[in-house]
Image (tube, one colour):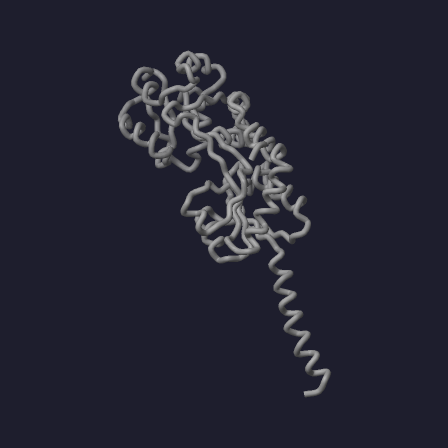
Length: 289
């Protein structure tokens, strides 16, 4: 072997290792389509809350290369387990998931299911709130049977609400909407006065109202049985050495940009939801993580 051949054998492995290092500097952002956090079509395409959050993260993390990929919720955590440089948004923290992913501090906070009615009917519901500003679903179904509840057939509203709805499922004041337009269909019925209230995530209604151009001024109220829980969501990254470093850098950006990230939600909340969250200083608490 001559001197030049030896140099080639030494240099090639070094170049190969260097290329691997460069590849590891790419963050693969995993986004789960669910309007309005990720909007894949229509008037507001690519203007979802998490899509704009990722764009700001990309801007503030120039030391990395970035790629975006759309996956369903189950696929997101499966890909995190592949030990690639994957990160996803909107994850709820559980002990089981912490075994396979590193979690950032919270980047968003979401209200849980709420009652949804219209501004013109809000006074009737306001008169029913207790001293904590909450309304009981069970009391509504039992004591106010003239008020018609619209729900989506086949959808789970969580264990607590599902048990109540199943208990009174044969009552005439519960209307189940079935068909392809189940969610928007309930909103249309609310707009036309065919139902008086519905159960929905506050942020999940505004997009449909805007895109369907419904004449509906929404008003939301917290559900007593849920004790107005708030859902704090996080960015998760693969549980690798590189993933741990990514989370440290992401946390730095979240602390710098939390005001911007939270304001992205204002577009998708009705004024009453914003007022409640501000009164309870939910947004303010996010600034002190």
